[in-house]
Image 1 (cartoon, rainbow over the protein chains, first blue to last red):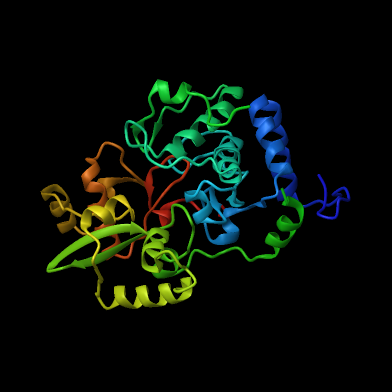
Image 2: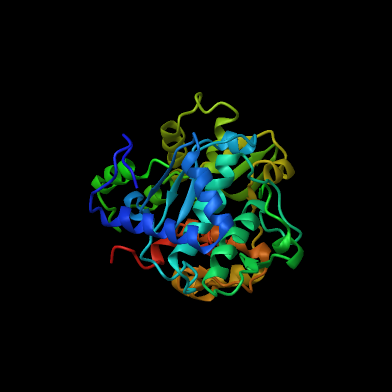
Length: 170
Length: 176
């Protein structure tokens, strides 16, 4: 981990260290997740991660810097809200917190970064961008023996949609 | 990723208290999944009720050029309109409002109307498991539930991770 000036970070910021550890664990969880982390690290776009409570919020999220770029499928940075201590999702399901980080940082933020956020909805009315984020989330979940997520807002994501390749897997 | 310096900066920010007002929460702007706003829309001689996420409403109001309507101006005007019971006039058809601008038309079913008559707390208990909307409800009731909660000054939003409608003020605080 490095400071912006390139020097090695030697601080003891607990949140920063925890998030960095979670990102490192995601890299170890799966090759594709590792590749996505690498893409974001090398990106010209800026992605910041902070605690939801810093913004008066209590749930994880990822916000694009430019909505227009998302619509136009052009790269943009993002602001990720991530609570690494929260093992219970907002709907009361227990899951490793970094599965939530995978959804937002390596799902949504990655798509914002690459200009690959899909518009429209799936067969059952799930936004396509959420289908893609769930698929990334499932990669992280698989590494931790978490059951595959097959619904979003109570709507089924079909097996065909879940097994379709991610948009830009290289 | 510019993590370290930004983290250090953000830690200097104060933690929010749980005392924010209804409108502070509603207009806590995000570009995805912020709170729903209930608005009355006048289209020719018809009046419709809609719920729409705050960022989508701002995008609609600002049109293609957000430099012409700053977020602060939008918030001030919209909050005043809502508090005075005013709506917005449009020349855009209801169908286009829904498909292009992500407005959701409110149609109150007899079941929801009956639940409304019981008051706020029984209504929330009927439709929510604590802070989360029950998943076995007719989809068309969702907008009506959001609309009525807004009238009671209960803010709702969509949880990005699950897609569920939640009442953020009823979720346990991470700083508790």
